[in-house]
Image (cartoon, rainbow, N blue to C red; front, top):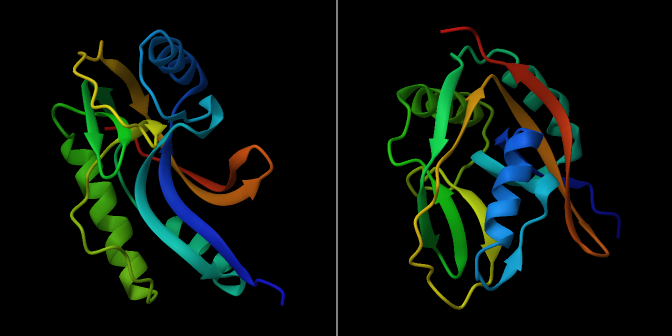
Length: 173
């Protein structure tokens, strides 16, 4: 049977220079679990799960209608969420981030895409399947968020790969 779905999510990509700094810091710590690949670092805005391939054009067109402002994001809290996810989170969530998430959620609902009913929890995953809960302080990693992306998640031999299917700029504040 041919799978005619794509596993999709909207996210903020972590800029390469920040991803390198985050991974260098993470790798110098004694975190356990499976480290997330540098190229996969992101902050999820909306997880869509398996979507029919023929919905992709509508999702790309919908994303182009989102109007949101660029903002500064600082990830300065180290937390463990769910079952063993070591993450960085913002100590203070920028209101522009919340407005972007709300705009995406509203438009996705209009397309009939059902999202997880849990409240939005901004985080960037560093490690999965961790058994310990780190008690360290995060140094604070910041960047200017100027775009959001639609990613496809694909299973590959050495883990997961995220492919960028579309990118949309955020307007100057």
